[in-house]
Amino acid sequence: MIEIGSGPEAIDLGAERLKLGKLVAFPTETVYGLGADALNADAVARVFELKGRPASNPLIVHVPDIDMAQRVVGEWSHDAQRAAEKLWPGPVTLVLPKSSCVPGIVCAQGDTVAVRCPEHPCALALIEAFGSPIVGPSANPSGRISPTTPEHVVDGFTTRPHNTDLEIDPEIDLLVIDGGHCRSGLESTVVDLTGERAKVLRVGVVGAETISQALGHDVDCITQSDSKSSPESDIARSPGHVGAHYQPTKPTRLVQSGQLKQAKKQTVLISWSIDTHPDAGGLIQLPRDIEGFGAGLYRSMHEADKLIGDSIWIEIPNHEDISAEHRPIYETVMERLGRATHA
Ligand code: AMP
Ligand code: MG
Image 1: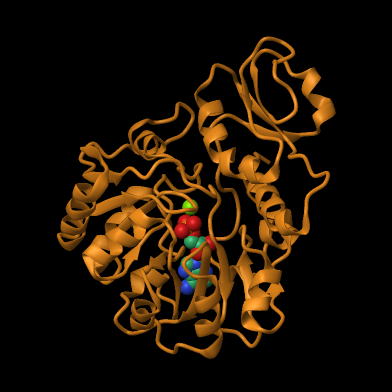
Image 2 (image 1 turned 120 degrees about the vertical axis):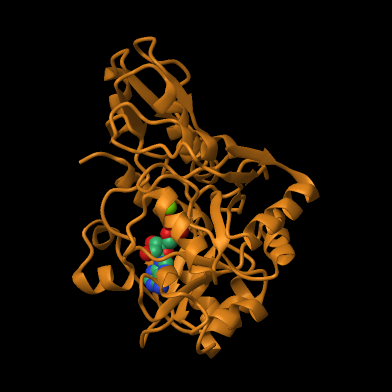
């Protein structure tokens, strides 16, 4: 059964469930996470099972403060301290040497752990009420579109898209804590602090420049072309960051604004520039500004997947007049769109 709850009662119920090794989906400022006790290998195994996530793709451990982060990290470096002080709470995940208390399954049997302090009050309240760190990968079947509302979470685990072989678990036992629509709507920036130089493994709305300012030195950044076909070393360092991801079930492609007028009725459009479909088909509108576009992108893909039609075209976001401050959002949106589209 899936239950949606909200307010302090849902937080208390969520903490009780986590103590029993059960799963709780919770809102963060990025996307909804699928929470479980990070120090309980059986509970973590349920997360992998429900998501259908390969064991080789490690999970992010969520903490409410630096103190709890230090419990899951083996060696808390100066860089970790600087990054955490300046960038937490927020959508930045730090990869650090793992402490022995973290079960191997969390870290794909590697010797590093990814840790993040989210900003959303429900996420913080849940971890604090539980009193121990929780894992929180996106609360959706692996490879599909990340959820940005409680309804997306429920839909993801209860509806079997017609053209996939995704198994639905009839015994599902999940509480979803309702915290409304996620503010940023895009997954966190992942920064590896274990190498000689800090390296951004996954781009996010907090850009490399901000991270570099926080650390007081340069950071390397996985490039966009790298991230679709990563070199071996980067696959090893960021195992989950390879191949197709964030995909609607309908074949999806990116188009230029000028191509929209060629759309046939059966093509669902996601657009920031038009307000009617040229052939009376389905249309989902997104804001013109990149912040609004990024925040609404996953919701628009969920909605487009449900409309009548046999394919989806997404209009490349407006990239005129993007300020330096908003550039990382644009880059993140383009990286996620690259993975959302079918080869
Ligand atoms: P998700 O929570 O599903 O959005 O994905 C978590 C991301 O963090 C994936 O890209 C993982 O590969 C990455 N990640 C988690 N743990 C580690 C780790 N120990 N080392 C490198 N990347 C990690
Ligand atoms: Mg995910």
